[in-house]
Amino acid sequence: MRKYINLKQRYFKKMAAGMSQINLSKKDVEDFKLWVPNFKEQTKIANLLINFDLIEKNKNKKISYLLNLKKFLLQSLFL
Image (cartoon, rainbow, N blue to C red; front, side):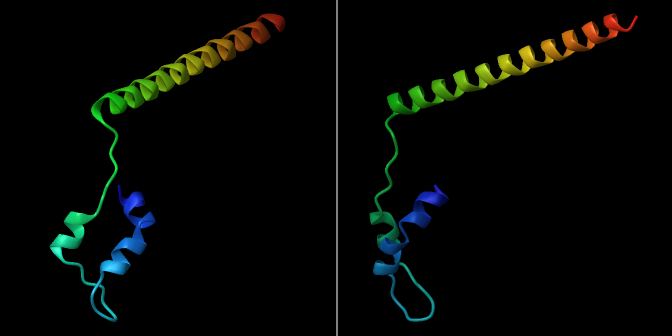
């Protein structure tokens, strides 16, 4: 949210009163439009991120398995 507000600094500077210190009224902040996806879209986004996490975990397990296999095979070669 902080990033979004930083991107919209022009809005706050336009609404600001004062010279050296920017002052905003409560109304200026309340009138600021903040886009938030609806619940259904948030759920889809969350599920997508969960799936990415699962894919990453599975890849890490596979890498670990292959590294152990490599280690075993190399040890077997030199016995």
